[in-house]
Image (cartoon, rainbow, N blue to C red; front, side):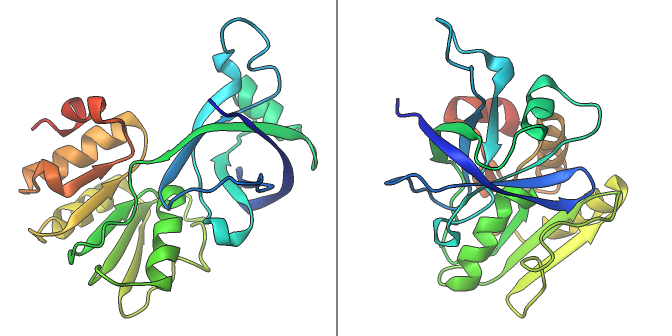
Length: 228
């Protein structure tokens, strides 16, 4: 397993308590849209077993051509040891990334694509806007009660791309049911396990089949999430 130690280049405040940590691109490091990585802090591998309090599984919110590895996350005043340590780090301090992989690249199969999960979906939107081949229409649906929506420069509707924001869960599930009317579409869902179960249940009840649902999960986890 290759571990890349790379410095923090920049920290961008995207909204209240939400930040993108931009990391320097290590030589030879690349990834696909929709990728996730293991993001770790100094000391995580000093003992015989990894210190899991210093490791998080994170989506990469940028594409390689943007020149940085972007990790977007919330860091609230009251937070975990990992988040508080990250908050106190300085530009130039190094973090580790390893086991980078994409379970949810943009599928160009002639089907409409709908995505939920803004940090993971941002690179897919950029890839689509650069080349829309094989995807008739792309739709992004996001729920945030704070109404401080992220990445407004990217999530702006065009003729072929629709960015939709709602501020309550009832509105969100109503929109999910409406989107599920596309019997041939693909649905990308990213979030907490509880959020995944609830969203998938809404899709399945509306007639969406398991093969239409894309999850940022390992294959062995699919059965639990996609069962009816």
